Image (cartoon, rainbow, N blue to C red; front, side):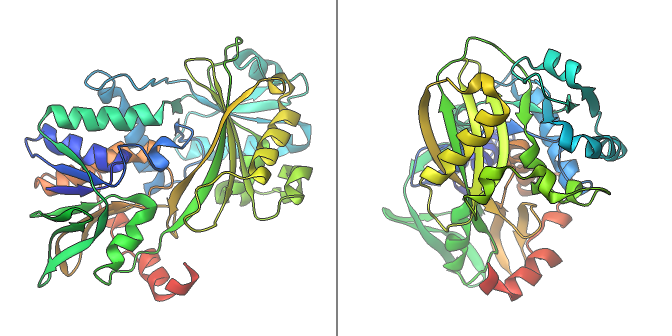
Length: 398
C-alpha cells in the first residue's frame, strides 16, 4: 500500500492501516508535516461547521482524538473549548447564532461580557460577550502529524522522502508512482497530498477542482498570563455562510477598517495560546496559487486587527511569521474514496479543515481499504459527487 503525502491525512491513513496489520509506505518530497499540516493554527474547530455531513465528520474527528492521546506521542492536545468574542455593535446577531448552533447539535452557550472575561482574561473591558463551544480543542499540528507517522512506523510502515512526479497506470489500474528517484510499485495508491493532489492526478488526466488557500500566521514570544479557550474574533464571522444567512446579518458590522486597506485578503481572526505560553495570531487568507510566502499586508492585517481588539497582546515580541496552503474544494468537504474507472486509486484530499477531519479521514480510508464498513458513509465525499463534477465541468474557474 502506498500513501502519497506526509501530512495529517496521509500519516493517519498509514497509522490506521498499520493498526490493522497492513504495512504502508508514505512517500513525500518533504518530511512529515512540512506543508499545511505543520503550518495551520491547530484548531479542532467544530463551532462553525455546516450542519450535515461536514458537522458529522468534524464531530467524529473530535471524538477520535480522545482515542489517540494514549497510543501516540504527545501532541499537546487540549480540550480547551472555543470562543467567538464580539463587541457591542455585533451583539444582536449572536443569540440567533447560538440558537442555530444548538439546533444543529452543538452545546454552544452565549456568555455576557463578564462571563467571557472570566473564561478568557485577555479579553478587553469593552467586550460585549462571546459564544462558547466546549467541543472545540487545540493541538500542535506538527507534533500530531509526526506522532502519527512515528506510530505508523512502529507498526511496520515506512516513510520515503522522494518527490512524486506522477501516477503509473497499467491499463485502467493505478500500479504505483514515478518519483525523482525512480518508480515505486504498489497494489493500491492513496493520494493524500493536499494542495499538490491536483497536479499528481493530472498526470493521468484526472481533474480535481482544488485551489490552494494561503493562510498566514504569526507566533509571539511566550506570554506569562495564561488563557485556555481558543478564540475567534468578530471579523471571522463573515467567512461562514451559516452566519451570513442569519436574519439581521449586516456585513459592515463585521468589517474592520483595516480590511479595506488590503483588498483580496479575507481575515479569519483567531488567537490561541500554546502550552509553552507562545501566542498564535491569524489569519489572513487569499488565493495566490502555490505561493506559500507570508506578506507585509498579511502581517499588518493580523497585528493591526488583533492589536486593536486585544490590547493586552500589543507589546508581545514576534518570533515567527509563516504561511501555508490549505486545499479548498467547491463545497469545503474533502474528497474521500475510490475513483470510478481507475482501479487501485483512492483519494484522501481536499481538507480545508484538516486538523478536525484529518485523522478521521485517515481512519475511514483505512477501513475502506481493509474491507471494513467505514464509520461514516463515504458517498457524500466521493469524487463523483455533483459539487465536484460540476466544478470539473467548469474547471477553468478553479
